[in-house]
Image (cartoon, rainbow, N blue to C red; front, side):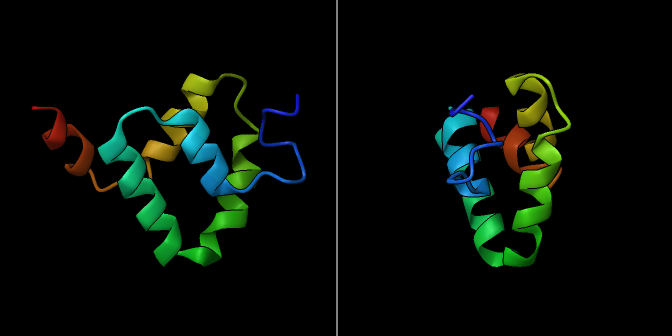
Length: 74
């Protein structure tokens, strides 16, 4: 499981890079956690509660503004 959030060398940004394929979405999430460093540890810890990468990605998307990702897909 060296490729999951349980690895000691993993941080929230490496998980974002690993999980998010859409570049605009990745940029928004990386920017969010750069601006909100105080939330990084909690978010990374929370990823351990999800059993699939899809569920982890869905959780990360909750940090995006409601219209940010969806408008970019239109």
